[in-house]
Image (cartoon, rainbow, N blue to C red; front, side, top):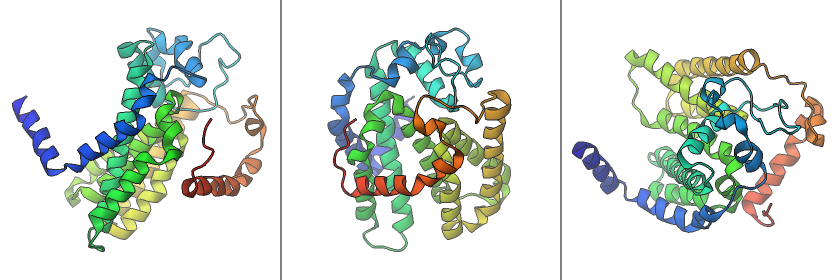
Length: 289
């Protein structure tokens, strides 16, 4: 135990910036600790008998999301069992006290921001003399940018911070770890699990594949074959769980217009969505929900 605590103390002494991230992170988001369960929190947690059932952990990958006695039951279109799993764990620890949910959501966001700082530091370290300053700016901007407020303060948006955690973990591991050519199986297993967990957090986790390939081609070409195969295995594993284990159909049409749109119509909205978020990234105004 003493050795473990000494290791933490030594790490903090060598990386004092992590304390900066935690102090600023809690100064910005501490007010959300007093928030109650609202909106989708009620159907996902408060009124959801599924996460409270004794069979929950055995059935968490079944594709079931709700058991609320409402029209939502059995209307699953998303497959994000990792989020439900975490909610189930939190419920057993904190009960229906949202403070614990909010606390860990804030902590995970702070860790993600620290990962952003480290990723940029590793990218800039060999090409820019102000690498640390630029990286610190990028990490702190990610930490406090208003566009992330909903993801950090709204419990039902926990999916955003958890899939981001595994995406950033993958990118950081690609850049930081000096892999040996004799560790191909270990590398493949490691990256396959990280990518799969990102996908099980949210479908948007697929972004880790192109981002990872870009980093590999630029900085770690020896990992190209391993990362490519890991990505294929992870995507195959996700599709197997989604369509064979959970048996989730793509034909679901929910009560909202976007759910009823065809795939082509949804794809046509991508340019406007990208423009919208780019605008909000530069001019973060009128973000309240």
